[in-house]
Amino acid sequence: MAYHRMMRSHVKGRFAPANLLASQAPIDDCIDIFIQRMKELGGERTVDFEIWAKYWAFDANSAMNFGRPFGFMAKGEDIQGIIRGNDRGFRFGALIGQVPSLNKFLLENKALMRFLSYTAGITDPTADFVTMIKEKVAEAEATREQKWSLLGWLRKEQHNPRKQGLNEACLIIHLANYFQAAIKEAMRLAPTNALPLERIVPSEGLTIGDYNIPSGTIIGASAYIVHRDQQIYGSDVNTFRPERWLDPDTTTTRKMQSHFFAFGHGERGCPGQALAIMMMTKFLFRILQTFDIEWASDQDQWNLRTWWMPEQHGLTLRFLPVAQGPL
Image (cartoon, rainbow, N blue to C red; front, top):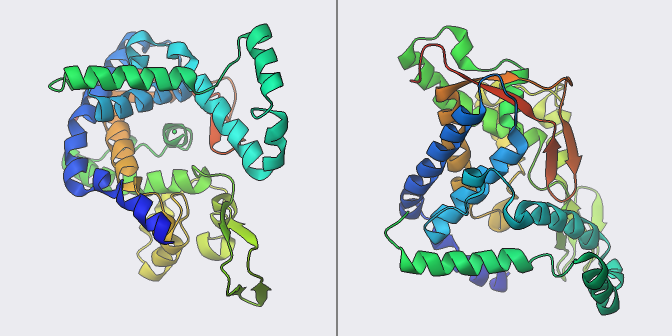
């Protein structure tokens, strides 16, 4: 625990309120780029929102940390296959994280890696990304002055407040509350961490309810399962219903919040969750200010594949100009 606190202390300053405020300018700049690209690609044409959301996320994080975006949105492509490699890394980590002994037959097998490098050009899956990071750090030093699903549910379930005939002032107030509820509801249904967040029972052992768990046992809780407990979230746990988070019964909402596990919980919760929420809120709010979003897939639903992080496929949308103009 002391080691974890020490490691956490090295990064917590990055997510302090003052630094979050400083992060807004590069985030806004990248949102502007995204909106411009959607105007160029939008209209009656369809957009694979899954990949474009990833382009934006990678560019925004690069802009915040290295002074300028990687350029995924500008080029409209997965530069050097970085995103594809990132996805494969998560899939590999999901497998090896649960069955570590397999790695000696895979990445730790030097003969196999040499063979793959020679026959298929497959080398260290992180090499290109590390090279790009080094390049961006160098650029940032030289030019310091330069600076994942929810839309699918909002459109499919017709929860866009713009369609409710609210005037501008009421719409802004409604969106401020509703957006936070909708973001939480999206993360409840598709939490970032799909596999159990594992912990090792300490030397004194652990008692949970009627169960006595001996020291050294690896235990974990799955956010996907916790978020579908009907005793906590109601009988409609598989339904996207942001209104559950706006329940006037504070006892109910406190109970739901105390079991909300999308960012982990307690001392080992994600230190960057405030930044993540800010990025999602700004990104989605600006998009719905600027566009009317239509579901454009020939399928009724998109696909959700779960490895370490859930991957959404088939999130096909159409970005149309807002009829009455942005707020």
